[in-house]
Image 1 (cartoon, rainbow, N blue to C red):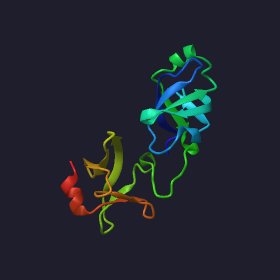
Image 2: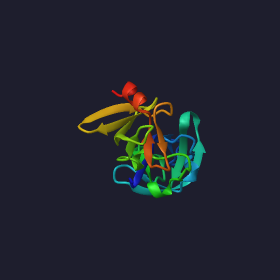
Image 3: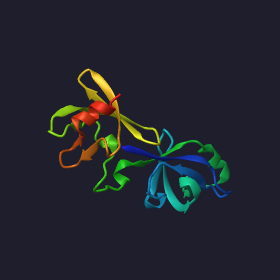
Image 4: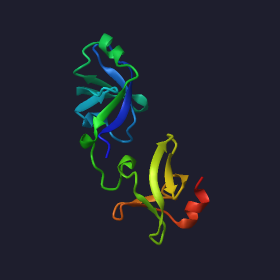
Length: 166
């Protein structure tokens, strides 16, 4: 399990009192649920004191370590992270970063391969599946592959896997 989740990027200052505009990478989760964030590669810790939703999946946030507009400009284009332990658990969802290495099974429970990595291209997420000495890419969409929480495995049919893999 990774320690850090990248949840957004500071794109510019917002106002003159040190607020920053953050482009959120979260779907359906507000920045207001987080109190502690970490900024940049050095993971500088900050406490969120105010959150204001903006258009286009962005938020204006005020952080205790950014007191004014000049300081806010120094944080431009830096990534925003949270500690993985601070992110909520969802009963019906899984974080792909947590299941790297899990098996890909067919409809009979036979192992087809294992999850090597994934790439999120915005429109879809592509899974990289290692099968012996070969690596294949398949889209992570419900019609093709699902994660079975009880079996702790990705599940597809053998035919679908052979049809869509690249």
